[in-house]
Amino acid sequence: MPLPPLKRVLLKLSGEVLMGDQQFGIDPGFVAALAAEVKAAKDTGLEICLVIGGGNIFRGMAGAAKGMDRAQADYMGMLATVMNALAMQNALEQLGVQTRVQSAIEMDKVCEPVIRRRAERHLEKGRVVIFAAGVGAPYFTTDSGAALRAAEMKCDALLKGTSVDGVYDSDPKQNPEAKRFDRVSYDRVLADNLKVMDASAVALCRDNKIPIVVFSIREKGNLARVLAGEGVQTIVQDS
Ligand code: UDP
Image (tube, protein in one colour):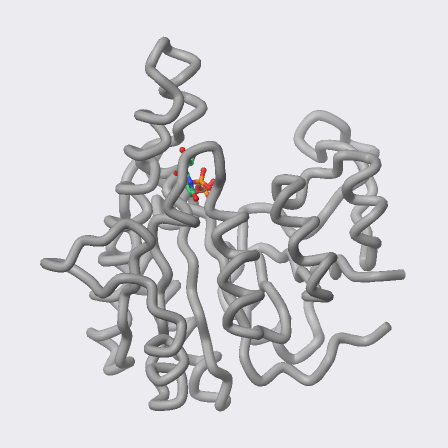
């Protein structure tokens, strides 16, 4: 099944792509390059919602593994996503792209709260809306946040820009024989526990018929190629 025509998309970027070649944190040069890709996509007339992870700064699971209370660590992870959102907002605005950050954890000195109707209005006015703090609750990830915002903003697709170029039948870093899917069903992803997004995010996309497009955002120009239906990617949708 081909992708529907894309008018509005949700672009999810893993936090790790913001660190560029560093081991940690935010590389402003790399964020600027990502922002240029987002601007190019927006200039084609697309409405863009953005969700950025926080794994380049803090992951709740990592804190919990070292003895922290899981919920406390997850709240720290959510705050990390707000920092990334502000970094991306800055980079986009330096390119002249109007943006608004809406956070699921209210922080009125730095950004707006998540208000769907207001987000809708921003998109109509040509602004990029960056949704921060995931779903605003621990025990979730920003992938679930991305799926939730994609559903409530009625996005035509969820584009997951990450460090790998699609979904494989096994981990390509461990298994040189791993095969990449061009297309795969939601049910196969869930049944085989394929590494795309966490199960709750995949299920939410399945139930709301939102195709997930997984591609590498590390390659320059790849977002534009994927939007044009070209380039290396995996599409997750009903078979
Ligand atoms: N997080 C959370 N609830 C959410 C979204 C995020 O608790 O709705 C926390 C969680 O600890 C997670 C961290 O924020 O590990 C950073 O997000 P994520 O791991 O999804 O970032 P990514 O892997 O995309 O960089």
